[in-house]
Amino acid sequence: MEIRIIEAGTVKEMNQFIDFPKELYHTDENFIFEPIAMQKEFLSKKNPFFRHSEATCFLAKSGERVVGRVAVIDNTVHNAVYREMTGFFGLFESIENYEVTRLLLDKVVEKCREKGFRRIIGPTNLTTNDSCGLLISGFDSPPVVMMPYNKDYYDSYLQKYGFKKEMDLSSYYIGDQVLTSELIRRLAIQISDKLSASGISVRTINYKKLEQEVVQMREVYNESNRDNWGFIPLSETEFNHTARQFRQFVAEKLILIVEKDRRQIGFIVALPDINQVFGHMRSGKLFPLGFVKFLLYKRKINNSRILILGVLDAYRNLGIDLLLYKKIQENLASEGIFHGEACYVMENNLKMNSIMRKIGGQVIKKYRIYSFNT
Image 1 (spheres, one colour):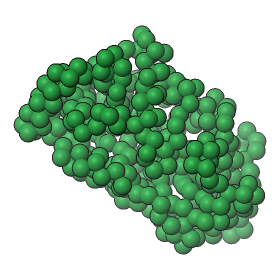
Image 2 (image 1 turned 45 degrees about the vertical axis):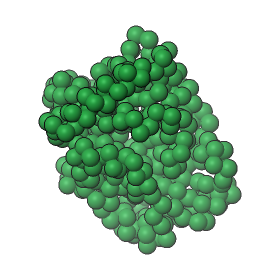
Image 3 (image 1 turned 45 degrees about the horizontal axis):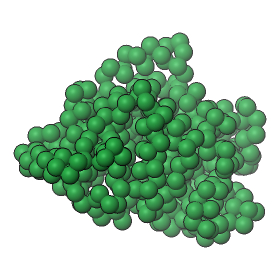
Image 4 (image 1 turned 90 degrees about the vertical axis):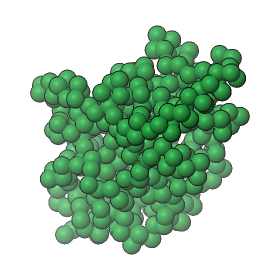
């Protein structure tokens, strides 16, 4: 099979880039194909990422047939924050043929060397604030919202090429044991009483004042995550863009804010697993039938993702994190959602892994980010 790698530089080629996974996974019931309109917006100038960085998309073709894809990513914020010269790759897909993967990764290495990058990290789609990593275990169930899913042979292909493990990430299943555990109930009461005595309170976000809310939320998000591996701070534009998106499908009660003296010191965000809806819209088209399915299955969502929990350093080790998990599970239950996944949890985040185990969380999926020295 003769394979050529081309840049997806036309509208037709970008449509092929977006559509390829739908063909690749057409017999895999666990694969979720996000609506085409969402994917196009994500890869367009409407995404604030492209105000400071860039991504070039490439297709692998055999004749006129698409057999793979990859994006080469120049994340200028990452390199400025970490004072390094690192390139990234993402949105990687390939048929079960190592030669296709090899040629795609050759292109990634070539483009990164042209820019003077000494190292390559991936997959990140497009950043570590988006979905990232390869699924390496837990192929028996669909991904939750904003999480990756891929072929099981990708791991061996990347290792064969020379990519090494950089970081493993876990996804913890959390069921209603958080609600029913007597131990956690008593702990939550004790923690809540102590925090109240210290002037610390928990409330839901107020969407009517979203612009004011997100100012402090972004500060807490960036500050509480700054020591996490690979983290890059979100700009005001990027954070506001994400907040407006969440407003469309996340109830206020699923975003909890912790305050002391009217200043935010922490928060937690849970997302209804809208992938349960997208799983019934495999064409990726919203109209005409897709929107009807969206409205029908949206009411049947019974799964969730705990997206992020952040607490400022000065207020850690007070039990705020455990209390937030308890309260968010109660609020999810009021929406008819009794289970979900907390992800990502990095392997070197010993504190969060410990909390997950204490509340009865079980690792059900693992993801891996790789690196390669050019």
